[in-house]
Each structure stands twice: as C-alpha cells, then as structure tokens.
Image 1: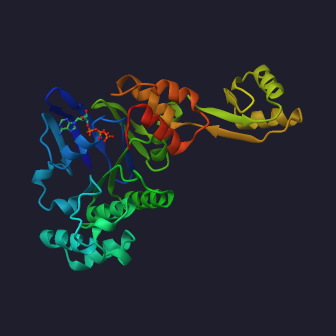
Image 2 (image 1 turned 180 degrees about the horizontal axis):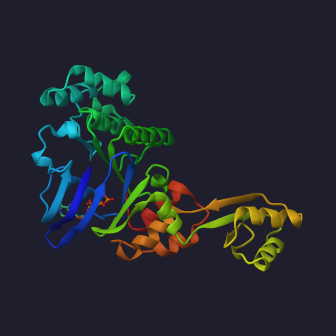
Image 3 (image 1 turned 45 degrees about the vertical axis):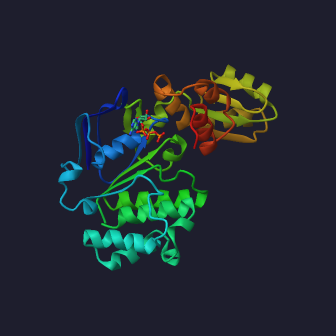
Length: 326
Ligand SMILES: Nc1ncnc2c1ncn2[C@@H]1O[C@H](COP(=O)(O)OP(=O)(O)OP(=O)(O)O)[C@@H](O)[C@H]1O
C-alpha cells in the first residue's frame, strides 16, 4: 500500500506537487496519469525518498521510504529505464544490485528469465534497445520480490509486443496481490492496463476512481455508424430520438444503444458497414485536465477534430498538442 497525504513539493516558484492525497491499494493496477509536467515523476521520486517533500508525507506500507528496513524487498521501482552503467552486462548490473542487498544469485537468473532477458544477460547494456532497457529496469525492480511496484512510463517508446508484455506483467503482479502504480501520459494505453486511475494536473488531484467509472463519466461516449446511406439513417435515428452528428464518413450517435440502431437499420433495409461503441478515455482526460495543463495550445481543437484517429496515435497527437516532445 502506498499512501500520499497532503504531499507538496515546490522547486523555487514551481509547484510540482501541490497538496496531493491518495492511496494506492494492493491487488489492482493503478494508473497514474497526467499531462506533461503534471508532477507524476516528482511524486514517484518523493515516494522513493529521492527528494524531500516541502510538506506532507509519502509512505510505503506505513513508513517513509528512508525508514524501510529492506527497501528493495518492499518496493521495486523503475523511474529511468536508461539509468545503467552502459559497460556492464545486464547480468552484472543485476548481480551488483543483488549482492549489495543480500539477494541470492539465483534470483538474478529468475528475473532475467521473467523479463525475457536470459539470452542477452551477458550482453553489454549500452547495446540494448529501449525495449530491452525497459525490461532490465523492470528486472531490477522485481529483484527483491517486493509487494509494491512502481513504474514511470514503462510503455513509453515500446512496440506493440513490448506494450502487451508489460501489460501482462502488471496484471500478473496485481493478481498476486501486489500494489502496482504505473504512470503514463497516454490514457488510451491505461484504459487497457489499469483498473483504477489517479489523474493529476499541475500537481493537484483531478480524479481518483475506477477506470470504468472514468470512461462512463466521459461525455464523449458515442456509437460510430458507417453506412453508405448516412443521410437516410441519420434522419431515421434522429426521428427515433437519437442525437446524430458527423457526416458521410461516419455518424456519431448518442442517446441510443447499438441494438436499437441495428434494428432500425435492418427494418429499413439500410446497409451498415460499422457499428461500434467509442468511449475515448483520451477525451475524458482532456476534459478533466483541460484547465490545468501546462502547455495547452490546441488541445481542445485536437480532441474535437481528430476523431478518426485511435488509441496511442490520438494520445500522442494530443500529447504533442500540449507541447510534448517525446
Ligand atoms: N528538479 C527540478 N527542479 C525544478 N523543477 C522541477 C524539477 N523536477 C521537476 N520540476 C518541475 O516540476 C513540474 C512537474 O514535473 P514532473 O517531471 O514531476 O512531471 P511529470 O508529470 O512526470 O511530467 P512528464 O510526463 O513530462 O514526465 C514541472 O513543471 C517540472 O518542470
């Protein structure tokens, strides 16, 4: 369990974290979300005792990090996937960590196996791709078999296979009863990864609720309908009480369920090429944080107009609109 109470961190005039309070519970994957510069990394650094709070507390299993007796056995963390000595092999890096913390050599081989790095364990880290480095960072976090895990942007820059792997790993860790906190600026990614969401913006709490609830709270839920008979179907749907927007490319229907739309189209023998629910977490994210992003040029415009892009692309587009450079 991670507990944050009134956590505040100021760097000069910058309020990186401002009166933040939340708990991260075991057994679920908790997504930690926020736009660029929201204070996610700072919060994680404060939890790990890498910085001192200006005010408030951050505890792991009831204690500040610095008071944990065997920290790596209690909390594993990946903050920077490239924080390795490049000349060392992955195995040597993990062995050094294991020795200094009194973990057996066997555990190094276990985590190499667990993270799919066994075959490259003797290769120098400087030749590692970003994906391999992420895996090594995760291997280090898992070394002490801790009950609390924290990963800062673990899917950043990974290919779909890497993303799937991390998602599966996070799920398995939560299913084993661990506390899992994972940060991301991509809501669309977290939608499939996290059970619970903590959203912050400008260092302040914006939402702390179940992923499903957050999606449902979004006012941007709609059914996408693609049909060559868009004008006729649109008129029929409107007449039947639905709210219809969009044009020839796609109709966006709200206030009516999929089954009703399908029935109506079938009754009037209108062909339908696509009928799919769209509930974009990215839109919810924009709504939640719109007033509080640091760099908000074009955010609104992007989220309103780019509705034909999906998932990570949309997240990335929105992120870039906020001035992100990743
Ligand atoms: N050491 C520091 N000195 C001064 N300002 C800092 C320092 N660390 C962070 N900040 C500032 O604090 C704010 C929060 O930064 P932080 O890195 O925690 O955000 P983040 O949510 O992790 O963002 P990102 O998604 O871009 O990594 C930003 O305005 C950042 O510039």
